[in-house]
Image (spheres, rainbow over the protein chains, first blue to last red):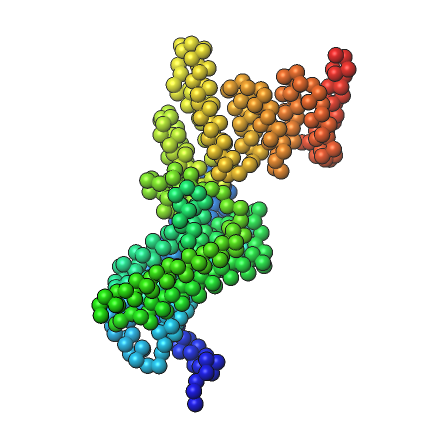
Length: 262
Length: 245
C-alpha cells in the first residue's frame, strides 16, 4: 500500500523526535555545554560584581540589563558553536551514515538536529535564567525593591530562546554547505552579528543588511523600557516572525543537505 | 561532472539567497511593527567602531560598556584632560543612549568644567567669554545629539535652556527650550513658569500672560510643586503691567 503524506507524518515525527532526543543527550554531554554554562554563570556573577559600577540607571535595572545581555550573548554563541560541532562530529565518527542508510529522510535529520539543539538551548537558558532570577530576587529583597515582573521575565527568556534557535538555524544552513566546524562556527557567528546589526541599519551604507532577519526584535532589554508593554498580539507577531524564519532556514538547510555528498 | 555539481551548488546558493531576500521583503511590515519606531542608530555604531566596544554593545552588554566608558571619562576628568574626557563621553552615550544621567552630566562637564581647565585668573574677560562660549556650544551639540539618540526629554531641554541662560546669555533661545521642556510629558512645572519669566524679562509681556493663561487650567490643585497660586498672581501682575502701558 502506497504511503500518503498524512500517514507518513506520525512516523516522520517519531524519527524526528528520536533524532532530537539523541542530539539533546549528545549536546548535554559535550564539554562545550559545560563551558557555556560556566561562562554564562560567570557573566551573571560578573553582573553582580559590577553593580557598584553602574552609573546611568538604578542598580536592579542595571542588573536586569546586564544579566539579560549576558544570557543573550552566551545563548547566541552556544547556538553558533554547538550546531556545527554536533553535526560535524557525527560526520567524522560516521554515525551519520548509519542514520541516513536507515529510512530517515534528510529533512527529517535536519529537523531532528534543529529540534535537539533548540531543546539544548532551552535547557541551557532555563538553567541560567533560574540562576539570574535568584540573583535578582536576592538583590531585590536586599534593596526592598520588586524585580522584573515574572511575566516580563518569562517573555524575556522566551525571546532569548527564539533568538538563539534562529542563530542555530542560520548556522545549520551554513553547515549544509560548509566543510569544516571552524568555518561553519565563524560563519554562524558572523550571520548572528549581521542579524544583531539590523536594528542599526536604518540608513547610510547599512541598508543592504535589511535582507537578513532582524535579531534586534528579540532583544530582551526592550522589555525593561517602561514605555513598552508586551501585548498578546505583539507576542504572536514575534512568534510568527521567528517561526517563518526558522522554517525558511530549516527548509534551506534541508535542501542543501539533500544535495550534499558525504 | 564536477562542473555540474559546482553549478548545482551555485544555483542552490542563489536560490537560498533569493528566498531569504523575498522573505525579508514579505516580513518587512511585521518587522517594522515589532521593532517599533526605530531610530537611526547608525551614527552610534560609527562612533563605537574601532574602539573594541561595538561587539559588546551588539551583544546586549550596553549598560556595562557605557558604565566602563563613563568611569574612564571621569578618570580623564580628574586629570583635566578635555580631549580624552570628551572622547569617553561620546563613547559612553554611543554605547548606551538611554540614561539621561550621562547626557546631563557630560554636558555639564563640557560647559562648566572644561573651560576652567584652560583658563587662569589672569586671562582677559573677553577671552574667558570666548572660551566659555566655545565649550557651551560643544555641550549644546552634545545635548542636541541626546535629543536625536535618546529622544525628546524635558531634562535635556531644560539643560539646554540653562546653558543658554548661564553661558551664551541668549535669553530667547533659553525661553524657547524651556517652552519645549514644558511641552514634554515628564516636564516639571517650573519649566513653564521660567519660560514666562524669561518672556517677561525680554519685554514680551503679552506672550508671557497668554502662556501662563494657557498652562493654568492644566495645573493640579493639590500639588505644591505646581504652585497654581503663584501662576495666578503672575497673570494678575502681568495684566496690571499691560494695563498701565
